Length: 244
Image (cartoon, rainbow, N blue to C red):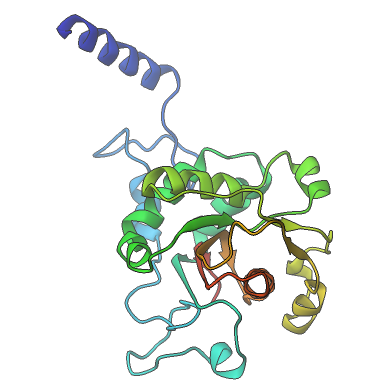
């Protein structure tokens, strides 16, 4: 047994030399106090977490602890029950999430799922969630990209939390134009009829909807509306980052 452990440690050390862990934020080898740590010191120092003062509905950071909701959530009603995010969508996180989504950096899901569970695990546990669902993308877009980053993230979070993940019950049935090009009103209109629930597996359940970024909440709203119309009891949303 001792010999096997020595061999295993030697193999790991060799792998670390040949294939060093890279910072998921800047892509560099994180030399520093912990050369095999997740992030480099410079990136870690620049991370902006959502903090203790956040909107009780969407999770967006707010300036005063006396406020309960952000301006957006005071103006309009959301279909999801609550949303939380780990980071503010800026700086190194913004660049990293772009690579995670478009540059096949699927390995970043490991870091981001760990941060979600470390930062929001207690909150998620308290919700009594039955199943994790990724926000789906249209099959055409999936073929072009090769994967759905939300699905990769949902699988990683499922593995960490022990909660089951369902990759099939919620589907994207309309290939909508990219949301980032649209206004808030156009985003909501763009997503009408975009999702469909198949089967009755989710009826009466509390689901945790997983995505990489929350901006206006239009995608989360459209998915939550479809889920609730199919009989889902509650829809909670968790994202890596949220826009200001």
